[in-house]
Length: 241
Length: 192
Image 1 (cartoon, one colour):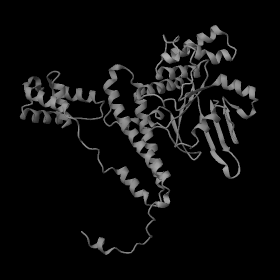
Image 2 (image 1 turned 90 degrees about the horizontal axis):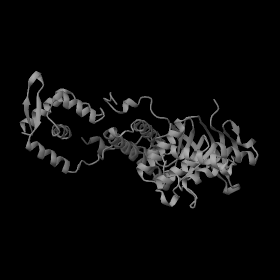
Image 3 (image 1 turned 135 degrees about the vertical axis):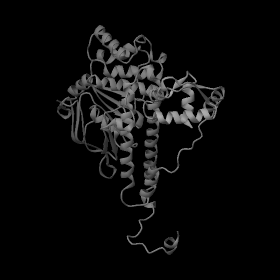
Image 4 (image 1 turned 180 degrees about the vertical axis):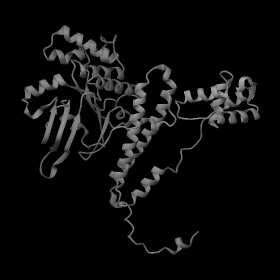
């Protein structure tokens, strides 16, 4: 099966000579359909660089990045932009919604910019908003939505049109604990339904929703956590739950 | 203190016999706190001796107990009294990092990472259990899982903080490693 995302020894160097910075060094990572991968690490460890490479917002100075089996380096600027629009969705800490537009208009926008007619774009937007449990709030403008609701609109905008790869950079940063948990439930659901996601977070409690947690330090992947073989061992005496 | 008070709390809802109490207790605590019927009856015996419960029925070998007024007032003060048990300062992981800090090997950062991975794997599993439990009927189970999750998270945050402190204070300030064969220390050797 083709991985949704693959990094093959991807490196990114910024600057040259004595100001050269290795933001990411020889990073290899495979994200399969159905998987949510969390990336953790101290500030400046390369988390956001990894995410930018994964989404084709930046190119590696060495190594390769493949989305749905396509090496992004083989694509023209136009083809890369098209692949990104069709396959990749972004969620940020700042929701980045457009103020004057309703939730449905915000979500439909990427489709309409992509040439989809207004009516099918709105239908798809409503379906995406329903998937993040915002039915009934489609016609609200961002100012009339809570922070958690705005982030759900942003997630709907990221997944609308069946985009498979969801890239999230600290999506819970501006949210309280339970609202953040709801965002993770939605990311988890997107992956369980056949999508895939990469989540950058410094928050262990949110990273724990991922199938695998990758640790970065000084631009290198140094470790990975992938759950336990025997969860029952955590809860001695558990039988009926 | 916690088990006797929990039995009182359940008896405050209705009279029950030992096996019922055990089953109810295990159901409410998600099975993380195994209790045998013998323990339950021993505890009930002590509560009866102290006048907090009273035996009301012994038919069919099932001893059914009811809470007394004194029991109710004990229970009320248990709920009213905040838990003041201090977090243990003697923690094996803390000790391990303190010892690793002044040694060249293993690298304290490697020890931190190994511990962090295990904490996160635990968090992942608790979170999987939480993801499966969504209904309002699962409120008690969610309380319990959240408690385990926040404790594991606290461990990760502490490890993150240790790592950040090391980054801020380069390791050259750490005490040099002891020579391979230290000179004998007469004071230590003669102390009891």
